Amino acid sequence: MSWAVEEWKEGLSARVLQKIHELESQVDKLKKERQQRQYQLETLEAALQKQKQKVENEKNESAILKRENQTLMELCDNLEKAKQKISHDLQVKESQVNIQSGQLNSSKKDIERLEQELKR
Image (tube, rainbow, N blue to C red; front, side):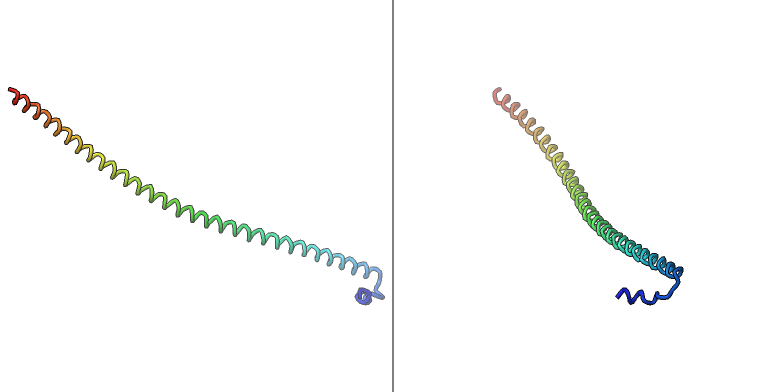
């Protein structure tokens, strides 16, 4: 079949045939270059999609970590409030113990005093 494609060139001068050959070579070269660039474009598009997916995954991970961080901060706040309440309750109880200890000591002195009076 290639002979039929070449048939139209019969009878052309050597100079014209040379120019046709140069143009065909240039066309072949441009086709190969186009194929290479198309391959490069496809490769770059694939890499771009991969990077976009990576960015999307990192955004999702970042959102998850932000929510987790917020939850942990709320938990810390709640624990701090609970600690303050327990500390306050402890102070109240220590105060009550001190009051009762003072009352106990006072009662012991009263008992000792009454026992001394009884002995007399």
